[in-house]
Image 1 (spheres, rainbow, N blue to C red):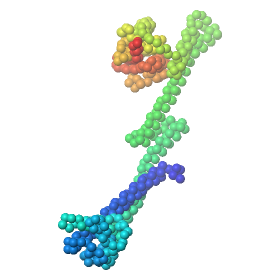
Image 2 (cartoon, rainbow, N blue to C red; image 1 turned 60 degrees about the vertical axis):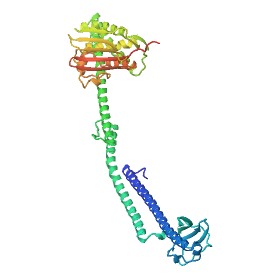
Image 3 (cartoon, one colour; image 1 turned 90 degrees about the vertical axis):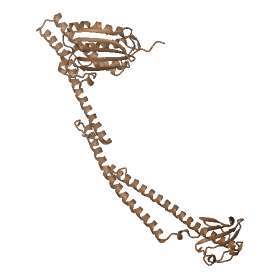
Image 4 (cartoon, rainbow, N blue to C red; image 1 turned 180 degrees about the vertical axis):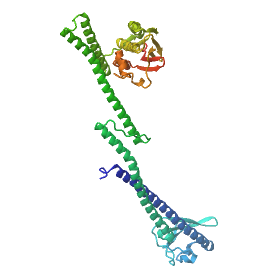
Length: 457
């Protein structure tokens, strides 16, 4: 039944159960304490009777020199009230002299042999510093030692505990209902938003901004929804970008071929060269997408061999020097010789080349690009810095995301599709390294770190 009930009811029942258990435990403890106090009270009373009897019999012994005279004599003769108590008298050797059955007016009787009921109090009879006997006393009716006031107090204590238990259960149930409502409502809110998102409403949000665990869950759900929305927008932009990049050369090829077919343009070397260039552009685009896909899926083979990174960086610089000069840029390099890493030389050269191409693309004419290679903290560090337009702080976390663009129009005019830096990141990670970007008023800087090769031997 409780399984099909709501969370609120289950919490209320749980709270009430805890309260009931606590009240029951308190009742057991109180009963135990009462019983202990009662036993101590009975023992103290019995001990008091034993002490009185020992003192009386000590006087008898002092007068008569023996305890035998107490046999078959009424206990009241000695000024003692033993009603409800049983008394036994022993000599100094522990032999039973007399036994009281516990009825006032009945003489001692040495014929009784059954044992005394607990609790038993024993007091030695001492005369002149010598033990001449012992008195042992027990209560025949321990419950009768309590007064009516004692019994009433114990009864009302138990009644009070029962009332407190009922109040505690009711209060706990109410607290459980209140707490469950405060807990269930935000949970239901999160559930409703998740259901709306499942149905396609990606604009649904919980709007929670508290510090509780449930509110934290709602906030996380909102952040996830924001991330999904960003991913959907990214996919939309990606589709548009890829379509545009494919459509532009295809339109150029189609227009040129149709013009040549219609006789509008001659099928000369210049027109055929245009078709060839656009075809190669399409090939480069598809090759770049396929290369990135293979790197991301780890299907691209990556060699693991000793690589002279100094030579790789120097070769990449020389390869791009003509590109920099044609763009009106100056390039400087500072490469430490003999830096060796373990990896794939071609892929490392590709990564450095992509960084250089990116710097050339976004540095205006008259700017400068610098390249350096150094060793820092057990890693080879390649830095490529430019004096270009820089990167906005909000855009820095996204620069290595595939197909991402901060300014689509500007990057499209520059010829980039957002693949190069994503490839650099994949190559760095495949070499157990990292790549990071930073920017300031003087331009952007990209830092590629790759662990040094382990020493031979």
